[in-house]
Image (cartoon, rainbow over all chains, first blue to last red; front, side, top):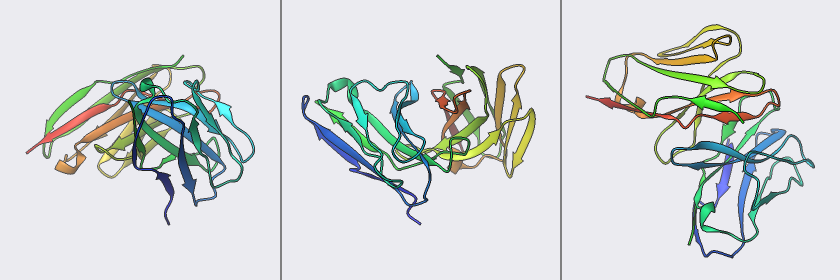
Length: 112
Length: 109
């Protein structure tokens, strides 16, 4: 099975532009997550969704929005990108909030 | 916020044993995870501890002491392919994962 896919693999974006990072899973997992990973800081939770139709804020939600219209997809939108949003973004999913999280391959985003 | 500490880097020789320590202070506790992450790749699940004691899975073992806020990941019979970053993550009382910054292990021939 494909598991979790993310698109694009990498992107260079001008500051002020908007961007949507895509995440799709085919495991029928209820919970999905978005993290950013920066050198020396580890993975930090941006937003999460415990089930389709619900979302919540993580540790670093400012400047990001998410939606969860169905079980499989969990897009992350940057409305107006800033250079500090340069990072590697990982999507993850788990069967429930009490289960192990599995990660997608990541999107490397550079905001100039 | 959560506080999870692990060493930044460790180096070991092929065939040897390496122990990666992780200490944590979190709001509530619902389990501790170890992930492996090769450069440029996604984190992959290695182990999970929720009760005190040792969990063994092949060459990898993970230990937890909840009273001490302490865990370690033990990698035995090191192979070159074990060169990677190892992430300690704690699930808090709200079932959210908080990650340490990761320990980069370099295996030398």
